[in-house]
Length: 426
Image (tube, rainbow, N blue to C red):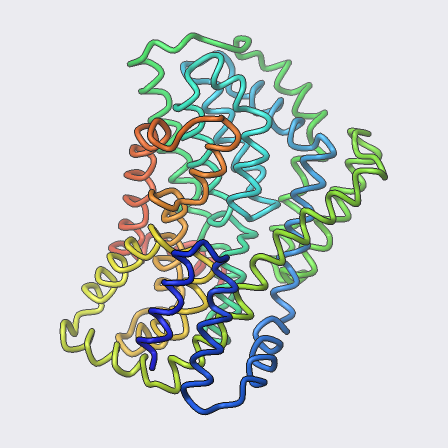
């Protein structure tokens, strides 16, 4: 039965139907084949999305929209440009640093890439070249779901249940995010020297950095307040998302003064659409996951993998390789909903720390958003830059090597990357 459900799902996806609705049709067929009432789908969908932590997603999506529309992102970009100064690849460095700042509020790869593309695609294309700029922005967008408050981590923690702490997962994403950002900036510098990209921007000036930094201080305090509050246990991720929205509104209306009341409907609609995409996938996929569970798919997979290896590290390597392939063809949220209930308990049986497994799982699928043939970030940048996929893919491979390399480092060096969560008491 599960085989037929899976085949139906992939066949419908190949027809171009949205992945959420493909889950819905496959789930209905699974219920019919198992003799269960179709009405059960409604209750499964309701319970799948009836989750307080998931409310953080629309709040952070809306905060990101308000920051872009209110010119808050531009303030952060200007500060990054002043801070970095006149170095090789400076616009690329500004892109990465700005991506870190935006990621610390929005937590979504597509939204971050779209915002950065709108602001930085033209200067990157004019001073360097368009494929290089498009690939860099796409890769930088991936910092969104790695650095807290990551929507991917919220989804994973909600599905994984009480075995995993969301604040611990947030803290666990900090070191990989900054390591990836640092290595990307190193590559940008080396590529700029090798290709002889022109120097841009004004020379470093401490007085200018202080002046612009003081002007940008209210904007820079948003991630400090939101992320600090969540990690410190002052408020939950959902409450942090609501606070981020309030701060973005206040700064947009009274600090930058670029946000207008007329902008709010479009911001709300965009945030609702982005949230609805995630919610529909989670809701419909819950029925498919239920079909797999009553068909004992987790037990069968456990028996197969345990027959292949009893070593926890080899188990993680197998999961990594499987997720690399899945990430090339499947949307990451769908993969979380389908696979976390199967493999998270299996990782526990291997004695793997839930936080370690979650970081490997999430990082691998996030990098999948950058891999052809269906990497969603590639399509976002194709739309913004008016380029075909080929030129972008040729420039994106170094960033894939960096991000997969950091993921493997997390896999093989858990004590290093779990140091911060353990230091925080998790």
